[in-house]
Length: 77
Image 1 (tube, helix red, strand yellow):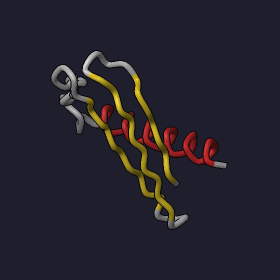
Image 2 (image 1 turned 60 degrees about the vertical axis):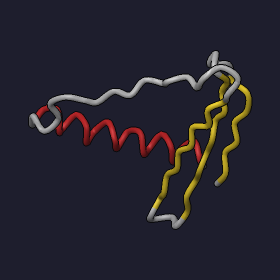
Image 3 (image 1 turned 45 degrees about the horizontal axis):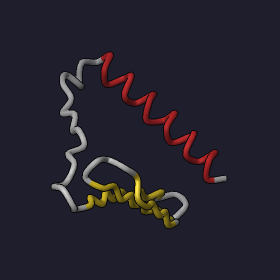
């Protein structure tokens, strides 16, 4: 079910984005690139999403070291 929901949400996002591109609403994008932490530090990236119709949300985190090597990830729904 989660994979189906994710596919539907991605499809909806693509449809809206294409409309905005065609209407000229999106001119430029600010692309943020991963910046590694200093040596001997780790970086924790966190993201969350909410699905209003289903009254649920999910959160996830990913930890990488200064070389960009994966250390750990943890999703929660």
